[in-house]
Image (cartoon, rainbow, N blue to C red; front, side):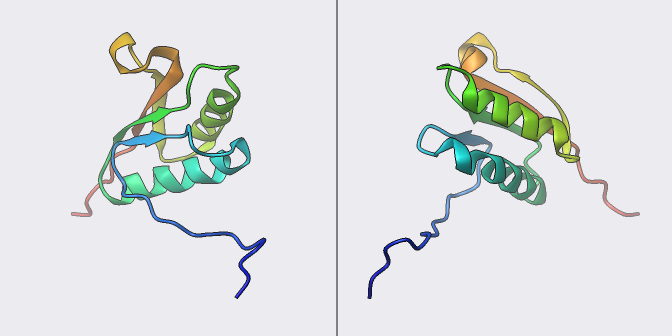
Length: 99
């Protein structure tokens, strides 16, 4: 069976860190949104997204998606010990348990 041209699905374990170095910029928009949704569903409310320093193409895409995502409370560049401007820390809105 020829799989040429078919998208391959693969699963990544969800943790508080996403490294985008192995992804194409065209995949990042959907990936970041899916990642944020999954983290929120799993109760992970602080995440670190590594986009690298380079020309800031990935950083721009990441920040644009975070700014538009209603689950994101706020975000900022990571500190010097966590990747500096090559990574972004995002804080997600915590779920409120119904009383």
